[in-house]
Image (cartoon, rainbow over the protein chains, first blue to last red):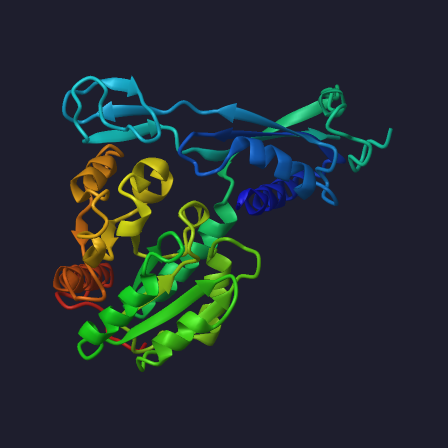
Length: 114
Length: 260
């Protein structure tokens, strides 16, 4: 699983932000993850506990916001909730849909201690 | 308790250990978690473009026939195009040795315990593996239908293989991977007569359920069935890629000179 690698990349960004703002430490890290991001949130949370050690974010908590899975249909224009393996338009059945939300793998914000 | 390293936090008291500290400041970042990888991938892509090379990332479960596909592709196109291969495996040089036996340059990345290639590994390989003179670079990713989908390597096209013995519901089980594909290949089609459970129509329906309109081709590296369509796809992709580079560089028509 690649969640540890994702966490390590996340913490390098967090450390860069903390260094740039000359913070004393990091209290919390907020991320936003969609069901199609390709990471398991439970594994990411476990990996975070390992990856944060030895960084300026050691002792910080990871706050995960879950992004909804939403598609918009090019054929009928409907905007609907969808499932990861079912991204057709739930209204008209067209496979011609666009993902509005659901593949986010985003560092939203960092709570810094000064 | 120690408030700097988290050493006293156990699963039982974890939820109490992180009471928000008064006097903290939230700094908005809004960057992709893998921004660092994406930056390296963009660098790789620029490097491929400078050499006019089309980079194709092959992804699949272990044993879906990626290396066999490459061997058959080299036999079919090796005279017309100069092909190079970067191999990703946890261990061994076996796949690179198979490609070199076909007279094609191959570079093996052994990832150790890492379940995927990332842009930095490919970047390091490019230092040792000259692109000059190549037309198509195949990057054979580590066999895995989960992790490789998250890491951009700088490739221009993702090709995902689904072999007949794996079952026709793989696109439904691994939507992230199959959504990333620009082309899906149903491989080992010579086994269709003996594995009647596999229905290519059902496999395609699962793919379309992902709102994917990419082409799906059926082929067998062993019998050669469907290989011509795959080779035509590669020819078209290379021509399109070169035309795009030609426009970007202000050269009409035929694209970028090789070997620069």
